[in-house]
Image (cartoon, rainbow, N blue to C red; front, side, top):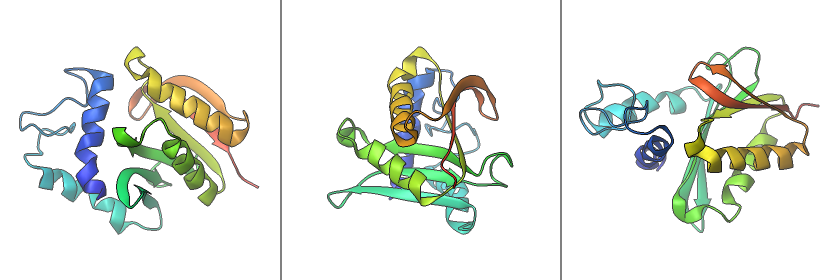
Length: 168
C-alpha cells in the first residue's frame, strides 16, 4: 500500500520544487531523482530496504476508516546522522485526509513510540508554506514548545530543520 502511494507523494513534492526541481519527473515519467528508473517497479525495488532493515528503518502506514491514507518512514543511524536518534525521512498524507488532524495524530503517535533526539526537515520555499506550518504546529504541540527550528544545509540541500528530544 505504501508503494502504491509513493508516486503520489513524489508528485506532491514536485509542487514544492517546480519544474526542473529535484522532484520533477524524469524522461520516463517517473517522479524520482534518478534518471535510471524506467518503471515504477524500478522505484519500488529501491524502496525494499525499508522492509529489509527492521532494526533501523521503520515504515508506518496510516489507515483511516480501513482505507490507506498515508505513510511515514523513520530512520536511525547508520541511515541517518549519528547525532540524531530518529529522523523523519518521509511523511505523506493523501489529500482527502488532510486538514482534520490525521497527520498530526500520526506524527505524535510515531514520536511517542521512540524516545530520544529527533530531527526532520522540510522545504523552506514559499511553495511549501502549508508543510512548514504543519510541522511547526505539530512539533510545537507535541513538545509543548520545547524544540529548535532553524534553516540550514542538510544532506538533502537547504532546508527548514526541526529538532527536539522526547527522551527521559
